[in-house]
Image (cartoon, rainbow over all chains, first blue to last red; front, side):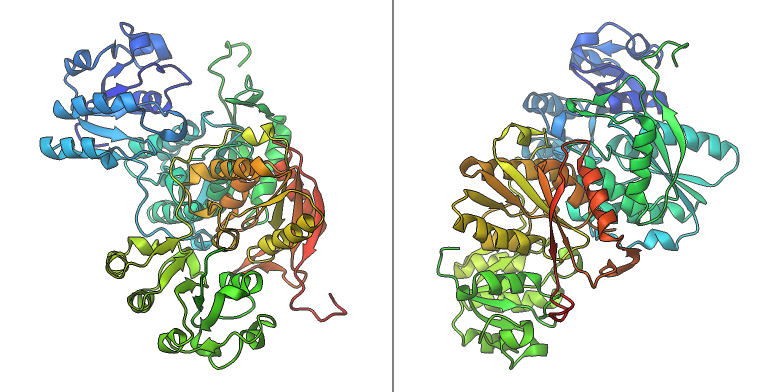
Length: 312
Length: 312
């Protein structure tokens, strides 16, 4: 994001290491664009006191306190289940718009489709950015990734919210420092926010998941030799496995990087689905890719934030 | 379909055993509702001469010839790749509407969203039925199928257009004749057309595939002890595997029925993807389901239309 954006991040009631993924990634990778976080339950603390990183950015309890920090944009930093816009937020977003704040949102409910908010945004001349809005003219996948010269690497994981985007962003920095022409194919709202482009593959029409991934990888390959694709979901996730599989078969990676959290033994919020042992999970993931293009797991990224140094 | 519908089926240029799935299923299961088929390339023949079933229903070359058969609805009976509305059809559909024909469509492009067609339909007081339009208020899957008493059986297949719907419709008839309270959970436009209800799971927002399947199975289970779920795609299909996986993990079947066509060795239109031997494919399919609910393959349905009796 090259523009002079000063976000007040809305994470009300859910600001924390595991519960506010978009907020946290934005604070980690573009802290210069964050003036404050709105969360009643952590108000009065600093971001670093809540997350363990992020420095002295303040957490405030009300929109008025947030406005005093001089933001020019409100970023929705948490993802309610199903990506729906909670009704109480409509009033809050409306007041933000009336105070001249742009809205940045990755919800499935498009903020710019809510008539009263669209109307207010038009009246006050501020923009609403719906990060998940799919590009027009999507189509089904046709395996065209096989025709490009670039190497494609996809992060996969045992569950959601386990480090698939973060792993790619860390690799991106390291590979670019070594002079390798590398691009990041963002597939979720947070990645798109950080990278400035991408496709929210979980928000496209189901038949076009793989097609959207294919189109994105082709675009990213135009000026790079290595394309790092942000993974989504998990092949065993009851809610999101379709997206995971479509992304795998549309991006046709040469290799996978497996993201896992050693302390997690079941799918978050779906405790009835146990996560198989990592070696078994890797085998399942390689089998899922193999009929289209063999994609061995060439690396493992462990999320150890909840372990002490010895255990990690 | 209990209404007095008299379809003229549009299958122009593609009427045949493998190329006009919606037309063919409608002719097989509700022939009393079909007055004719519009297809320039087969015009002058009967449906049975083209398909091998369907009796004396005529194939005509023009809309005017079709109108002479006294239809009250035009059904789009073929699915262009990506489900888009071909531009030349807009004029044809417009003329059908002006002649008082309802439109029934399973395309991804919603006919009722094409302004000039919506306007004409309103003016002439005829309805446009977009079979793939998703129900409102979809949500992500939550594993609620585990709470119902009914047994759930899903058809899966090595490829698209291989018999997953037909197998369930044949089973439905047989099981009902034996007095078993059985329902058919239609998940594609043709199934919805035949059954009169269902959800086109390939047309919902990607994150909601499994949720849509879950909602449909819960509905079907209300008045039946056995729910036969229409499968979609294939776990190795480059374009549609996401839908296949979402449907598998959302409907949480107790058992799978594997559909295959012995003469087919690669995915249709994606010849670079070879279909593994059936026994290996069954293993992959059982592994795909197992982490959520074990669903053994309890039957195999072979599509042998292109084999002679001895080979079959």
